[in-house]
Length: 290
Image (cartoon, rainbow, N blue to C red; front, side, top):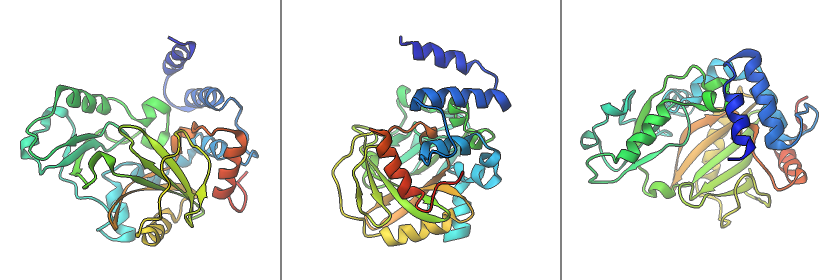
């Protein structure tokens, strides 16, 4: 195994909280980005790092909107109740799940973290052992235990069930980066569960020819719901210096999945420093905060 595996294991043994979290985050950032974080760099990953190491992530609204269940009330309070998917069930243990009692097709996923999504097909009567193991593992970890993102630290580990959208695992994610309450940048993720592709666009849907963690896929026309989606992103980002509003799009409809406060945990990689600077300049159009 590479040395980085042992280094991560050693860092993972650090106690949680306070200075230990800051030490962990500093070392991991320096390794991931091959540089030290600077407040005056104008680079988005440096900005995310200082956000992640500040008390700001413990703001109650940042915590609430990081939870896929609690965020629904937040969205309803700002945009109405038709921008989130119905919650079909909530579980705290995998053994509580009885697929035969669920409306199918549906998805089961952790409310307190990302990934680990299980797709349940129409007519499916039970979960495979692999699916059960995936969900059980998701209840044992979170972006705080894995990456020390403080906004996830006090979230209750839970699984939620939602209706599956028509495109199932191929549903595209439209993630809107907002700074100062203004949508600035759109990230479109496709084929996340097979051959992950990621395309970047400006808020006006101009192509941004940079790669961010994943290679670009096919470029596409703006979704018909783009203007309404931008309006919702503007409403949901009000009051946050930075936030990313994550949407699912299905036909002409869109739904809010969650709000993300530290994309890629400040470890997102670009092909070059110049590429990161170009994307950062779009996000921080009026200048990055110092």
